[in-house]
Image (cartoon, rainbow, N blue to C red; front, side, top):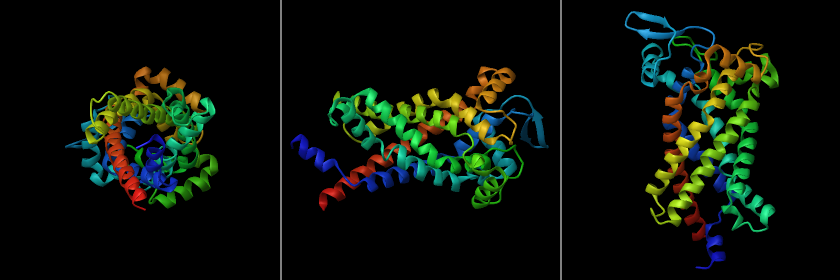
Length: 316
């Protein structure tokens, strides 16, 4: 088959790519959401008050952060397993908006940049600079659209052990934040979130793209699930290492009361002075576990959707 014929057979409608990306991300979120909740709880622990833990005799207070399993166990014992999925509705709304753009539009933006950089949208798409530029662009675009859902998700997840949720439903959360804090409240933390997701998108998508291509070009594995699994694990590790500091700042800032911080810079400075550099890697274990798991589910699901979409497109 010629290159042009291969290109034609691999193309399918944009709406399929967007829908496949959003759906795959929602499935990944469903599987890994409890880890995300644990990560958020660990990130805000000790922020302005001692850490509350569940014991056989009730709630005790301590100043050291428990590990991932202890955090999950505390949430289940005091609040019930259902609490691990607090904010899931907003999380799925976020992923459908977020992943649809950052992943669904990635190949198209990559081709556009390739054409701009060297006039060839086929060979240029293999350039690392093109891939990074595309990842940064779609990551930033996605945050601007999905930020309100991210704010609501974090507000549901971020609370002390045993404390009630701030809102009774997702719709009431949107309404209350909008009424009390205005549009700035719904888009609170956009700057650190754009920074985080530009890093995440580049580390996650570009890393997966490059690793997968390297494996296939050197015939280490065939195009299939073992290849996707390997590339996804590496992408998850790279993403966790690169994005954790910005992710902690984003969570702290979004969860803060109005006026608690003067801005993102103030949040960073106060974290550094009060808690030290290690504060920027709070929740690293659940972040790593979640991102690796999330990437595995996302990429395997997304690749299968793409295979099915291409087959459907070629059949017509």
